[in-house]
Image (cartoon, rainbow, N blue to C red):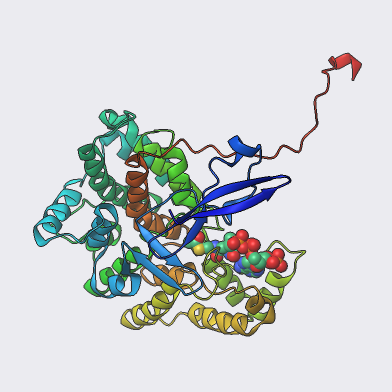
Length: 423
Ligand code: ACO
């Protein structure tokens, strides 16, 4: 606690406790405001509202800083790997060698899906969107692991579920891809690394460098504090719903194109620009037109108002992957041109709109042979440890409450019902 702030409301002065985070971030604690004054605060889209305190991820949008448990994203992308980052997010510290080996083994041990779930995935139409399949299959796990439906999971339950979901969501994504292509599934191979196993289940082969590129992408997506899907996970989890429905809720929130679905939307946008001759100008003009709902996909962010540090790393990664795979994708040049033009355009400069994590990720996924409509499912693989860590923190916070915001009602005041023949 760092003192109090004063709020004048007519003839009454209210003291609001000031809360300070470990990086000096300040907040006013308004939790008793309504009880003491009858007022609530109104903040559409939670632009300025903290929903919790959290020790998982720190980001500073003005300075372009992102750290998981204090470790800069640049260092983790350079030197760590996805499972180690997952452990770090969940447990708060880097694992020892023994802990890491045991964790890898535990995640890899979840190398099968229940038979009924396999059949369920196979029964979806081949054209089904992978996010719908993934969300349904994730919540359907609740039918097969009924011991995990109770409202109060123990620490051991939570740890087991963490490893289980990291293992099985990967299987669901690969299995649904094979189904969509009319191909037989490929079994998981526990001797392979997490990303190599995934690529092998998808394509029957996995190159070391390609697996490394995918690993970096997953690290960059692993957590992003109280974003739309993490907040959804916290809201669902706050009712003590089971973990399968909680994570399924996160997947659904991520699907939207203002959030994770942007990676699919970016590629479709770049392809359209390419088809129309490669002129980015039209897309920029459309994005600036207030009468047109179109937005420049992969641009802008609620919290980054300078640059998105993940986009910087991905851009470099993108050049590397395309060179390694000997891919000459015209979409990369269009993306670079679009970025350059937007960054010089007064509209984007004034609003501090920069490329976000999804602007270049789709070009990498495309080079890896992943279909466009699967990009957001790839994001799920990356974000899963973040959601699980946010959920664990919520469930272990003694001050956590069910999430239940208030509103300012603007509908009709009381009126009397009229029977049908009187209307
Ligand atoms: N193209 C054109 N204009 C934009 C864009 C864009 N991509 N993004 C924001 N703006 C404009 C808005 O119209 C608004 O203009 P105004 O002040 O004249 O009304 C201004 O910039 C501020 O934007 P808001 O919509 O208020 O910003 P908000 O924080 O609510 O939205 C969001 C952030 C959803 C990411 C938005 O920038 C957007 O829609 N971007 C495109 C979709 C996208 O890439 N989403 C992925 C985000 S990263 C992630 O979730 C993984």
